[in-house]
Image (tube, rainbow, N blue to C red; front, side, top):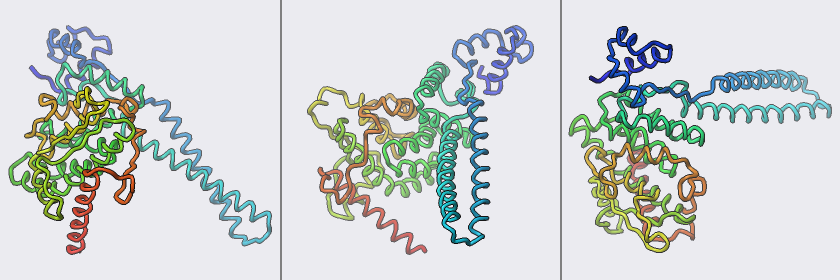
Length: 382
């Protein structure tokens, strides 16, 4: 018999208070055997990801800085109101302005950091929250991985799980592959500098194309230009990664269309919307390394599941679900990538003489053409 998250949480709370399994069975009606199963599967574990003392200190510090800023502004306003030209007062005004700017910058940084913490970490997180997202045997592994991610300061992992729970709570009918796309693509977008991935996730969240064929058809229509931009942005990241030692991978639509515009763009859109993605690899030092064991290969495998993650199987790791692939990506700390994510910088631009290779230049032209048509359509609507 399956039990809800509320029952699991109640069993965990009573266990922590010292009640025996027999007492819990009498109070909740959950058999002792089931309680032992919950304990074995890790459902009665707990995890806290936010230090309450640190949060309190943050609020105290924030209040102190805001109070000092207000005092500085009052003093500054008082001095400026005198309209005095004396050198001493002018120096005081200058010093106060510098101090105001310094404090304002400091407060801005603190607020941004706090927003980041609020976005990625939450105060209470239990195994019961994962019951409807992962198989019972996977839950202890996920909880352990979250603890490791916290020690590594890998907030991407926490953000991914938070997004999954949030999406599942807001729409209980969303299938697993679409949950993974909505939760994981915004994180992947930040990692590789591909805003189109977040755009695709937002489109899927709004349209809910898995509900019927008409919504899926509308989703495909709106996803076509996004996929072209996604292809260009992903290829730029792969080229930038290869420049610092990463796997030299090219991604293309199956059966590359002609170069002429706009026909080449239209053909590429039709190919990509059908989920026909192909990799092109080169030899060299990477010849003996399986593509699926590299970050480039995992990225390609994730892209090969769009635009319809519930219908498309992967090309390299066919048995892996999109949830498993995105979990693997997000739970890997940025410095554990090869090369580390921090070392991969955007080096290639359309007019940069260092731009080499057929794919970056062609995909950039396609992307620019799609954006130009989008701007024209927006202007005509306005």
